[in-house]
Length: 325
Image 1 (cartoon, rainbow, N blue to C red):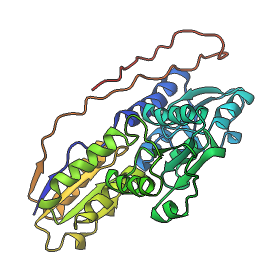
Image 2 (cartoon, rainbow, N blue to C red):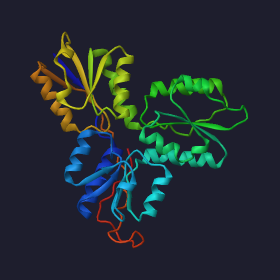
Image 3 (cartoon, rainbow, N blue to C red):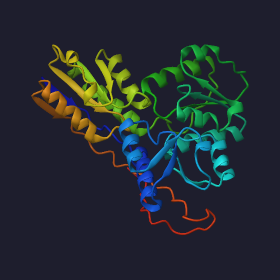
Image 4 (cartoon, rainbow, N blue to C red):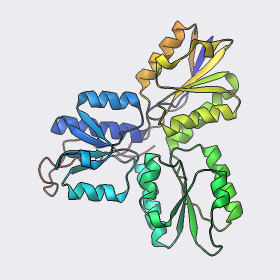
C-alpha cells in the first residue's frame, strides 16, 4: 500500500500570520493574552497556544479591561472593534488580509447602493464578520434553495461576494444559478476565494484519479478542510476528515492499494507527519510526495499594540513581512 501526499497543503499565509501574531504578543507582553474566538480553526494550534498563555474567549465581556486582545483570522463585525474601544482593550487585529479584502468590498458596494449577496455557511465566524459589515443590506445564500428564495427587483443593484474558504466548483455553480435568475448581478474585480483554498482543492483534483481514499488532516470546524473532503467525494473518492493519527480507522484501508493525504490551511505539518507514521504502522510501504512549487505568499504583520496607552505610539519590535507571490 502506498500514499500520495498532496502539495500544497497545510498553513496558508493568513494562518501563519495569525499564529505569529499570538506568539509575538506573548513574547512582547507575557501571558496572558486574550483571543476572541479560535485564532484559526485547528485544535492543535489552539491547544499549543493555550499552553503558552493564550486565553480563548467567545466574547469580549470575558476579557479584563485594558488586556491585550487579539481578533481571530476569520474577521469580526464592526461592533467588536467598538467594544474593544469601550472596554479600553489593547487590540491587535489578526484578520486575514484576504478576509479584510471582502470586508472592503462590502463597504465599497454598500456606499454605491448595492445589495450584497454573500455565498457562505451560516454561523461560520468569517460569515458572521462579513455580514456584520453591512447587515441591513446583506443576504446570505447557502445553497440552491436560497437562490430560488432570493427576492431582488430587476432594477436593484447587487453584487455577489463569497466566503473565502468555499469550494470553487460549488461556488461557481451557485454564482451561475444566481446570475441566471438575476442577470444584472455583478461580481467583484477579483475572486474572493482564497488562493490557498483553491490551490489545495486543485491539488486534491490532481491526485484523485490515482487514489481510492483521501485523508484530510484538519479539525471539524475548519471550513476549507471540509471542502477538501467534498472535492474528493465529488470525484468518486472516499474521503475522511481527521484531526490527527488517532482518528484513523484500520478498516478504512482494507483493499486500498493507494491513498492520498492532504491537510487544510490551518493544520500543522507535524500532525501530517504523525499521520504518515501511523499509516506506516498500518501497512503503508511507500510514501510519494507530489512535487509542486511553493506558494511563496506572505502577509505583513499588523502592528503590536503599545504596552501603555494605544495613543502612545512607539515602534513595535515585531518583524514585518511583505505580501507577494
